[in-house]
Image (cartoon, rainbow, N blue to C red; front, top):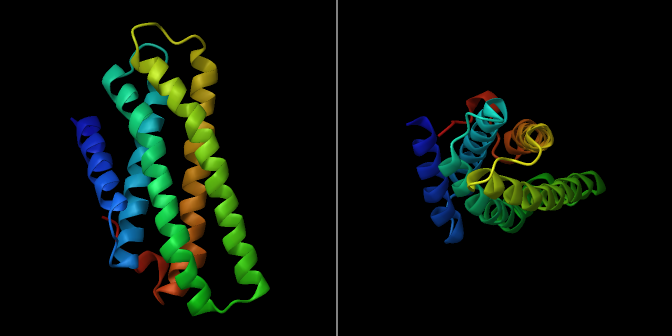
Length: 171
């Protein structure tokens, strides 16, 4: 049941981020919440390898993860990062931080593309060819994504939205 709720959350977030987002704080909190859910689901898959995986969850994430990630990254790059530059100033340090986060987006999307293929393979009828490598790949991805979210939350959102990072709500 928990995986089903996570898949529904991802589907709903895909629709939300594919449209016009009005409140950047709410959207960012929603993005972080759905990305944390994605990371938790990927961790469950990694922990369940090689035999106790949900083929349905793997197949669904294999198809939905990359488009969701791209839509969230597009939102951040079009809305959140310009707002950060506006509120923090167009200093070399701010631009450097934004470039770093954009580079991480690119890395995450490239990694997610490979991971999507592996998840679709796990969701298929055949046994995974190399479950250890797939588990390692899953862990590398979700740990990097969690670090990215933590950095945005602690060093960007708290300043842009003038709030304590612990005061940001979690959806």
